[in-house]
Image (cartoon, helix red, strand yellow):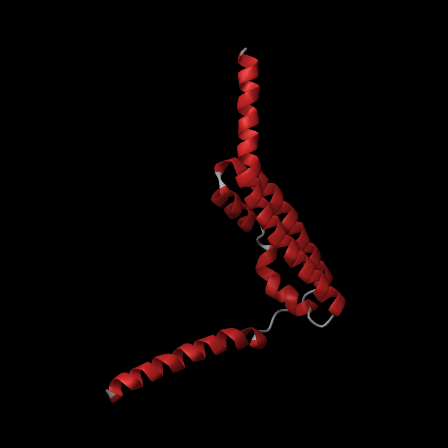
Length: 135
């Protein structure tokens, strides 16, 4: 019985250590020097590019559109943590980063909405047009 409790205690300590590391590890990371304003500009540009890329594949379904949106965010959004670290010390730029992050998630929701709401409507209107031409 003592071995069982020892095993459970070891598991709990290991899991707690893992959670603690996940929370505190970003504080120990070092990033190369980066211009915050330029990083913010790159992130915003990537959002525009991703929106355009996802709109071209909306007819293929939500998964394809979201995959295209997320992949088009690279390589700029791969450096998001470095940009966040560079902007951390300036309150105004940190707020700007927050706004850009919210725009990213809003655009992602818009891609979902476009696929689920607008794509079927566009398809139906296309069918109506085709039926009108056949007459």
